[in-house]
Length: 369
Image 1 (tube, helix red, strand yellow):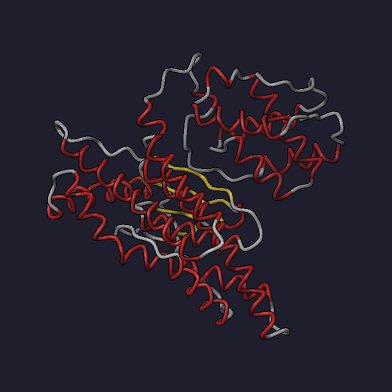
Image 2 (image 1 turned 180 degrees about the horizontal axis):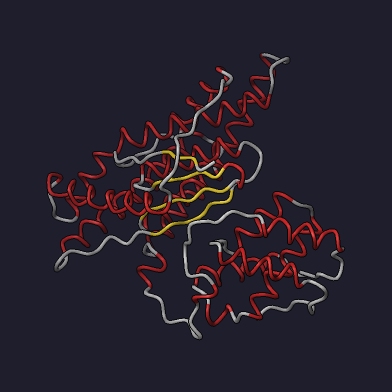
């Protein structure tokens, strides 16, 4: 499956990797935390170990499809995953890090539970949304990211959010109207965030998720978030988060330059952190305020009254809440520290220019440490 150099004296590294997989970690998670915590040499060793172990375990034939996708991405992005350059110190550091990683809520079967040959996975449950709809959403968001004009970005993003909400709500209503109703499928998905301003980026992810029936928990020390929701809502929320992060970053940089010209002594870091915080809060507010009209449109398209639609959506939200509480029984709400007022209000203004439309259902913002 993958071309990797032969094993050297990496028994401790491979043993630690196998153990951390059994504690709920997946290949992309392991590589993320290694790159965040250690150096380039240790990261190259991690790539080698992940691909070497995948060959030993026959992951291509046995692992869940999401796991295989992560392995293929790692292989594509690392054309020369050699381990020969790893020193004893680097091997020790990697093994030590992996042995001490905490247990994570499992998103898919661990290697010890893999079958000898993977069964064909149900496409709706495994992938979520309609590829044609997702293609339209991606196209609209790509236009929003590429334009230099705030009004155009607003129009494209709003249209993408409207399409997202209509599709997700219509799917839920049509599913519930089927014979005996359709059981709500709930999945979880991990998002890895990179410096700088990871807490503020996590807040933006959570606000977007809240407005799209997705619950989010943030692991501060790991710089990872786990989102819980239906496959459609998870995929669409991640698409919107990726796009809005691009738009927010661009707006933040422009606003930071203007603020610097007004107050040369001000802290750019404080301003930018506050900007992203204000942007995230305002985006969440606008998503919640604008949503009821979209729900009504989706209900009409599915030939269902809003009165009949709300219990269906409430049942779906309850299923997501129940799954979230099972996975994360002990979470606490995040708290913000003192922030730069000028950056905060600049971020809110930027969020106003990126006005969106979504439904009014929200979830709890949670933090797992």
